[in-house]
Image 1 (cartoon, one colour):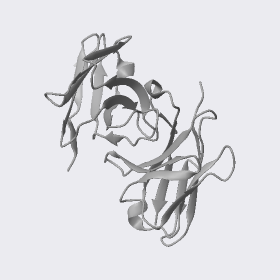
Image 2: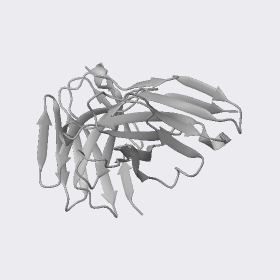
Image 3: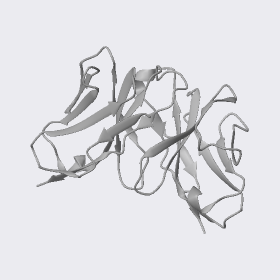
Image 4: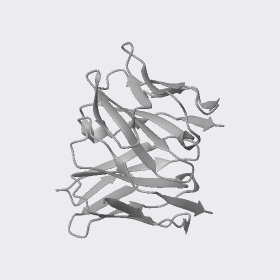
Length: 114
Length: 115
């Protein structure tokens, strides 16, 4: 079964450093997302991406965040200057135009900011 | 503001029984409701989607109901097994999921099935 692949699985970074989280969505999917989950809390929407541009973003997705699809397969989330409160599990997801199949999530990148 | 509530306490049931999980929402008019399973340290896994004009949807041992008047969805697992132990999340969207529509998740209910 097709999977969404995320790397790295765990990233530790110092406050103020830039991080790039990487994702390979399912190849024939059209829509790409980033969500995050702070430990013990609910999964929160960050951003959706379609046709090489942002479709929607949440209040969390401020100027410190950016997304990019640099080639036909990768989808990245960059945090320019990490803060302690950015520590969370970050999930990439993708979906097709066949809505009944739901969204496919990756296994996540656990980001720890120290 | 939009609120999606699921039982925050864990639900413990015996193997073979039916588990029923609840998702209530306020200040929201979702057109689509989805249920996901999440295991510790893993991403959500899609289970079922139900539209606002559907009352019930089934898939193998799973059944979902969607009552837009009560603003509630019920998620049933029949003949539960220890392997069903996980956290179950409901997620709402007011746009067709076959577009770039964001999901708003509930906090999830942890299900523990014991022998």
